[in-house]
Length: 377
Image (cartoon, rainbow, N blue to C red; front, side):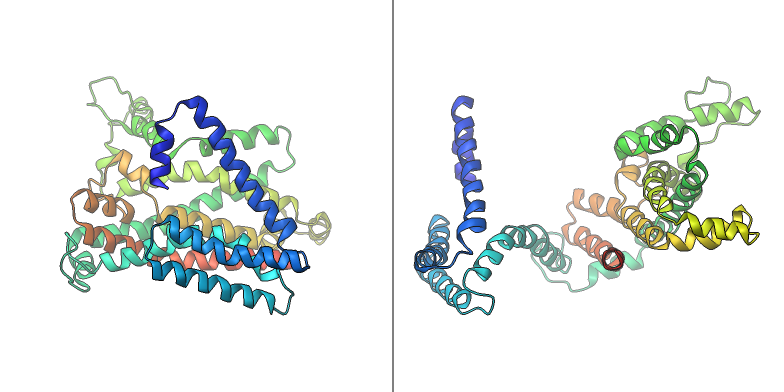
């Protein structure tokens, strides 16, 4: 593949275009083959599937210039797969078509996720150069030195504060602007920060937090307001431990729009009859909100909370852009990058494993909630 791309880059753009179009047409042809030809019954289509099962793995292994025994083994496995498909309970062609559609996704999953995860777990148990096995020393180092503990604590603070604040603010905003005049405009204004990258938002807020001496003109909007009110400029990004909370404000500013949009759609799905019945029973606005609206959109609230929690646990851009982890503001993802830049591959991999272990339960729980919602529908 690399040789093909290198050769393609040496050609004229006028020659690259038809080649790329040709590759695209081949991909479409393969797709149509699995849709139209693979599932058909008949001797001719059986021979076609046999040829594809045997020649395709043989061709792939031959293009990869593998060993002869590997090429022969690939052909034998292809023949075995044809026999399993031919004798399948669902009929000949079903397994062939199923594997044909799933193979690209499985290949990308193996190459892009499973293999890197295994490689990272292995690398976390070696020294910086990857030449000596040291077991759990990298993990012990993380949890026994002050910077590592502070990094884990900061990440936990992010996960506890950012999702809750973003969801609560988004929920309250969505409820109060629901069915009001100018609802679309209000939603657009709150959702706009989602269109800004984390880096762009971090630069904006870094200027807003900028502090100059009291006798100088303030260029930071927040400190200018403080000076107008008679106070002294505050170095927000240097005041420990509150600087972490000031970084979380940027994240909340961005993700409140996401929470608002999702929860607003969920609120519109709450039956009007339930709200009217609660009102007739004498429930005030707060009681209707807590006893009717919130239980009715609970699955959406859980999904929003877990989604934002996963994003906050993996946060990197805001911390890296605004403080680079200085003044005890570093988090796991930032520390992983810092160790990697310092050529500490083992420690960087250990941070990645810790982050993976912390994120995994949230991912599983979020997936189960989404599955439960689909079953209800």
